Length: 188
Image 1 (spheres, rainbow, N blue to C red):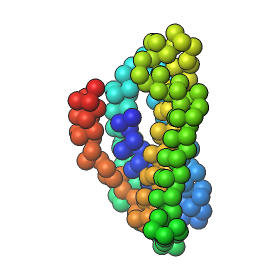
Image 2 (image 1 turned 90 degrees about the horizontal axis):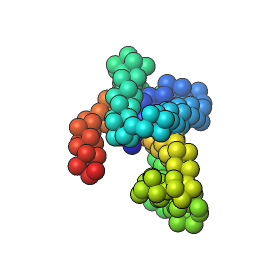
Image 3 (image 1 turned 90 degrees about the vertical axis):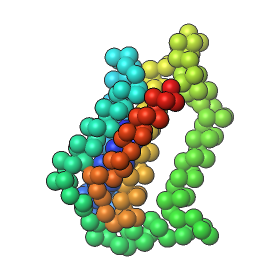
C-alpha cells in the first residue's frame, strides 16, 4: 500500500483541524477517513482487477493533493500542548502512548495472523490469489479488509504523530514518493 505516506500526512491534517476541541473526535475522523479511503482502494483493486501498486500510487498522489487543498498549502499548528504531552508521556517505563498503541496493534495482528483462519486466508490471498480463490478463500473480501485496515492504521499513525508534534503539514512524508514507488517496483 503505497498510499500510506499520503494517508499519514492527510490524516494528521484532519486530526489537527477537527481535534482542537476534542482530540478523540479528530482521531476518529482521521481513522474513519483512512478506513473509507482504504476500502475504496481495495474495491477498485478487486472490481477492476488492477495492480495494487498502480492504485495505491494514485491514492498517494490524491491524498497528497487533498492535504494541500484542506490546509491551503500551509502548515497547521495544533494549539493543544497538553495533548502532545499525553501522547508523548511515558506510561510504562520508557514507552509512550504512541509506542504502546503501536505495540498493541502489532500484537493483535500477530495473533490474528498466526492463530486464526483469517490470518491464513490473508497469507494465502497475498501469496497466490488464484489458488486461494480455488481453495474457497474470499480473496476480494480479504483484499478490501486488508486495504481498509491499512488506511485506518496509517491514519491513526498520522493523527497521533501530528498531535505529538503539535503541527500538521501537507508535505509530511511527500519526499517518500519516488523511493516508495521504486521499492515496490524493485521488490516486485
